[in-house]
Image 1: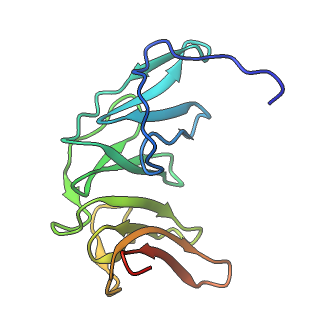
Image 2 (image 1 turned 90 degrees about the vertical axis):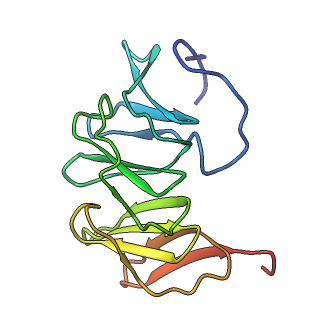
Length: 166
């Protein structure tokens, strides 16, 4: 972190202060990816060019996770799950949703035990034991938006929720 270089070639530049959008993450090959609104980009060309994928969700990419098999799952503003098996170059369309009523999925989390969790705007926490093909609502009665979820080493599931009352 002593020296820094700008890597803007191919990436749309915009300011968005939401912590749920535009995260940088790595795929199974160690390549960096990020999103801008409804496009997911992969850093290619010896790390100097952002290349857009074919991902075309209706609205913002809101969360992502990389499964143990290397698949990339991303969700959009409407809880659709898109899947890539080639490091983020190409994605399948929205073949399934976390829930038809989940709204925004703020976090996809791949727990060490292999279970996928989704923290959603409506309905709280959902889980999947088949790499995101089907989802089950875990019964959390959300009083606001559920922004994050994590499984502790002791096996406790912790969710972070916020609303107008705290």
